[in-house]
Image (cartoon, rainbow, N blue to C red; front, side, top):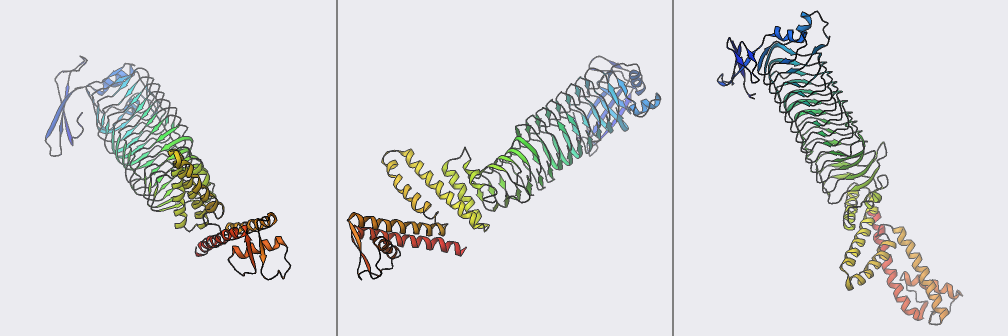
Length: 582
């Protein structure tokens, strides 16, 4: 089928035409096709059929066979007028076959409010070269409706309000020039609906409030140059929905409040241009909703308020282009943005999600997860491998950061540690220093656990020896001072050490292995236990009055306590100054 011509010429002569099926027509229509320069690029011949004969066949209830025919000014509106029918009165047509035909009309080729009774309906390979094509309000039976490989030169096609039976609706490999393609308010049956590999060019492509049943919906490799693509309020049944490698051009793509049903939805490798992409309020019961490796342009991408609690949305390796992306208050089972570039503002404040996967992403702008005017309920958040060059707006307590990382099943201890490190650095950049401390503690804990696990996997003597530094780190760095993030805990540990050493001196005195002795004859008449605790205090804080000195085993303990005192005071200074400077 040649579609690239700029003009054409029809010449009807009194030569007999024999169609492929042997039907004979008294006259032949010779059609010549011309390019922009007026040069002929092709010619075809068709059997010319008079419009009056067609109307007579309709009135007599005959099947219409127009294969390889030239039909001019076909109009059911004119048929109704001739037969005294109301403007929207249904016209019964038994069946029609118009394959490889040539339709021409001054205003419109009009099949509006037709009622096809039985059998298959085919316009395969036909050309509608002049005037719009109108099937508004038509009723199609249970046969196959075939518009494959058709050419609509005018570009204005109307199927508004049509009803289809159980057969397939085939619109694949068609070419529709610029104009309005209106498929609004259609009721499709259980057969396959396919627009695969169709070229819609510029204009409006409307599927508003259309009902798709359980048959597969195939929009694969369809190409749209620009304008508007609108599926607003459409409803899909239990069917597979294919938009794989569809090119939407620079169109505004509107899937607002669409019910995608329970079948698999595939937008993989789809290409969206520089128009807005809108899925706000869309619902779905399917388990898989995929946008893998899709490409989007500079418009806003709106996925707000979606209700897809059973659906796993995958945007892996999708290029979001310019423009903000928002999933504000949506409810999904999971969303994967793995390996994506988050170059602009991403609103990921999900009302509910079992998993939000932003692993291996590069974030150059704001990624917003922090609750504001409603709770954000994300069970698992995967940040492993993330390159955070921008800012992550998240709250340690409200987003339950500890749980959403710990709950991950597919990540290692090292990867969990790395995610806490990312949060720690992010909280430092955003001035949330309390949250930074919590993330830092979790980072160090999981780093230590990961190191110990790696040593255990090696086995041998390394496994045994690794428990010593791990235990030291666990006690001194973690439990005593929370990795220098809590000066209050360090002070509490100081009190515990003082009590411990004071009690130890008293126990040594009772055992006779050593004692503390007053060099000034104990002027305050301190008891043994009070003197033990006094010696512990002046030793721990390295005061060094010299009025009480150790003897025996107490000398060794005093040296150890002096070291611990210097260490703990330094530890407290670091923790305290860290808090003050921030």
